[in-house]
Image 1 (cartoon, one colour):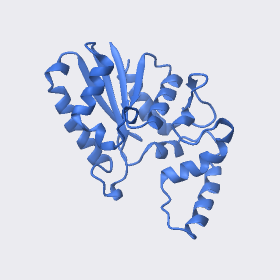
Image 2: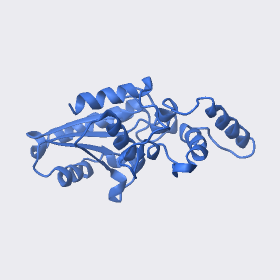
Image 3: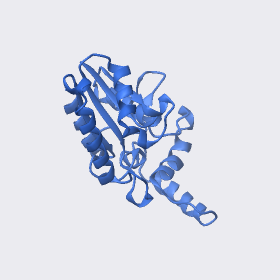
Image 4: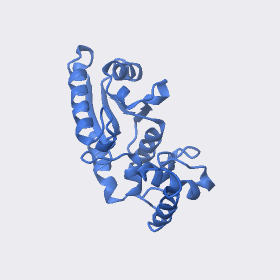
Length: 214
């Protein structure tokens, strides 16, 4: 049995590798759409793109495949923005994949929408709810962004809040993105000191992964 997770970007890829390491879930390969010279959320929902990845990564083997991406936010006005639209797009994708004769007999597909399979948000939203560092440090980052917003036009998004916090505390490890903060590439294991992997906010995803890849 081949186990595979398909993510949207390398940040998501590193996060899942780190979380799987922490949970001691082995034998799961994680690939990123953006590693394949593609790079938009819409590629996740393009059946031909997913089929190409599944075929190249699993060949004729029986496989359990999890596809994941951010829910994003309804207010962005994008094509697939917010949890409900993203869930609908995933359901349509899975119908097409499961009706494909090549996959019907030996491939199982599922999806998980970050942050928790039920709310709007993204990987940065999840990180802000799972901080291993002093939670009060986020207040400092918010004060900085509030001050900056008086000088220039900006939206205080979860990504901006997370990066404003992560950039200074991650200097010693050259960590500037939340997914890379979850995985220690050098030691090939989850990275300590950034994510609280026991946070209640991470439980929906952790439980899902344990059950899906049991």
